[in-house]
Structures are given as structure tokens and as C-alpha cells.
Image 1 (tube, helix red, strand yellow):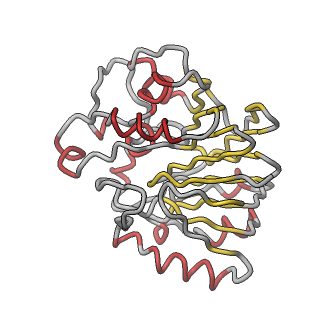
Image 2: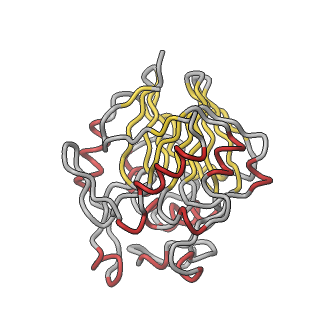
Length: 273
């Protein structure tokens, strides 16, 4: 049986197999640029409710690769609505703690393998966040437990940075949610389908060609190239960030690895692998 995939925008990915669902970095609220720069950030409960209602299956796990707002803003609201395990690093544990959900996070450690049920397995691979404009924008460190919601964008600190390797339905997926990697940590991890962050791809030496060389996927799926301060709806044109250079990224991957398929997904539309 095939594994179905939905891209949720930014780094958000939904994996579906045999009625079981795994969510990776689900980020749906997409606050405006004004809110990101000047306001405390609030999850859009209506959009989250709509999305969760669209899922066909049981959510086995929600996994978060790092805790910048465009990956973690909606996680507490999702955790309130689901009884699924929430997996990530110490910074995610802090976010759920201050959200009134102490103990809900399954804290993961580097290279740890975790069974997700129904034969699915997660491996948390230490990784590196890509550079877009300046190292100052990485917001390193963990979310502070002394804070109270709502947080501003710059209070969503990076936390631990993981690439997410998920085996489900006999297919190995690798999710790299930011355009960076750690060569030694990635060694030995092969995959069938590689989700690769596009934004900032030109600023990390060896990315993406070295990642593809190590992991040897048959298919690369670009993610995190959309303007995440604008709405993203099924059937609507995807707002692409110009500086991400999605066309250049696609061309580069095809030239450096001509035997690898590059497959761009439409938002919220089911694709099979």
C-alpha cells in the first residue's frame, strides 16, 4: 500500500498510511508580516480546526524539528485538540509547559530511534539551521520557561535542530526543515523520499548536493519555499518567496543529480509515494 503525503505549506508535511497519520512541523496559522514583526503571535484556531477535521485517519504522532515560530506556533493548539504524542526537543517541552501542557512532550535525543506504532519508526538526526540573512536571525537557545503566552516571533528560539527520518509503510522519508545539515550526523542515513527546505539553499556549503549524495533518495520534494506570512489554501496559487529561488533550486538538483526525480507538491493535495 502506498504512503500518501500532503504538504501543508512551509515545512509542514502529513504522512498517511493504512489509516495512520504522522505530522511533521505542522504550521497553519501563517500570521502576517506586520504581526511577525510587531505583535505577539496567536494561532488561528479556526484554520487549525479546519485542517485537523480534514485529516483522514488517526494521528499517531506530531513531530517538531525545531521551535522557530514557523514550525512550532501551532503545536500547543494542536496538542490541546489531539491526544497524540508530541515529539521534539527540550525547547518544545518548554513551549508546551508554558502552554498549560506540562509533560506532553516526548523529549527526543540525538540519533534516538522511536517506535511510532503500526511499524513506523522515527530517528532524530542532529542538524544545522540554514542561514538566510544573518546569524542573528537564528535565535539560538531554548524557549524560556519563565515566559507567558502569547510569545513574539523572536521568543520562539531555535532549540535543538533535528532532521526527521521516518519509516512508514516500508518507505523511508527524510525531512530537512532548514537549509543546513551536519555531514557526520547524516552519514549512514539513506532514504527513498527527501523533503528539502529551499529557503536559504545557496548559503550552506554543499547543500543540497551533499545531502542528496549521502542519503541517496530516488525523489526530492522541495518544501519551505512559500511566503509563510500569506494565506495558503487548497486550489489557490502558492505564494513563493522570490529570494528562495525555487526554480534555481530545482534546476540545480536536476543538474547535479539527473537520476533523482524532483517532485513539487500542491498545498493540501494528496500525493502518493
